[in-house]
Image (cartoon, rainbow, N blue to C red; front, side):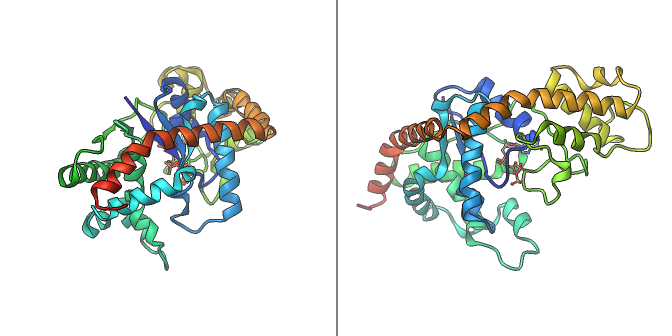
Length: 321
Ligand code: AQP
């Protein structure tokens, strides 16, 4: 059984990515799973080429430092030729109406003076990511479920029209994971590409910066530490982060604090300690290009080997080559 997940290098890995996804990939992931840095997806809005390259490398290092099985890790663009070819075949299997219905496209394109065509078509590239690797399960949140449904529809349509080539993937709900909110605006989720980095803890932030950001986290005027996500989202967020770092329940943790200051200090220390080994190992990996290059090359070879027969069959059956 192959599970497939990705992280987009639209910014440095943040605490939410780590607690909500990467840490789980390290614990639950197996050699057969596919965890990749989706650098092609980071190009659907304006991007800086050298920053994109550096972020992809840094994210690769963070995944390995966090303990994700290096045999399961790859960088999407190392397969750009294969993905480009299959994306074209799938675009010729998909209708304009299907692509234009994607809620993410509507949300992300609204109000922009100019929208890259790739913002419309990237769900088809995502279908190619999934179908090329023969993924059975794609753990996704609600925002990406529609894209996996599209991949399912395209796999079925292709198989029915040209011949059985693709595994029909399933969207699965990831095991309950922490949903980390922005520290400066707890009504939003923490984002790696947020305009204001004050509310985002990055995995590679130095400990003092992590402490500063958490000490300045927005709370409320109620001055009582309770776990009440609706009424006190800022306090609940801190309790959830502390819970994710300590393996305890947010509600039980709330009883142990009388002031917001105490809660913030405890949360800051827990986050610093949780991130310390990942940060240190990432730094070592970034200083040792040979090790990182080796993992990357191996990931590229493995994902390429795994997809070759499906791509060849898809091209042949559609009358190409
Ligand atoms: N705040 C979060 N809390 C918990 N999990 C989160 N994830 C993202 N933010 C949080 C999970 O991290 C994985 C990789 O995310 P992604 O790169 O695919 O895209 P995203 O969800 O759009 O992440 P960001 O950090 O918010 O990036 P930008 O700023 O580009 O939009 C996913 O499993 C995601 O659920």
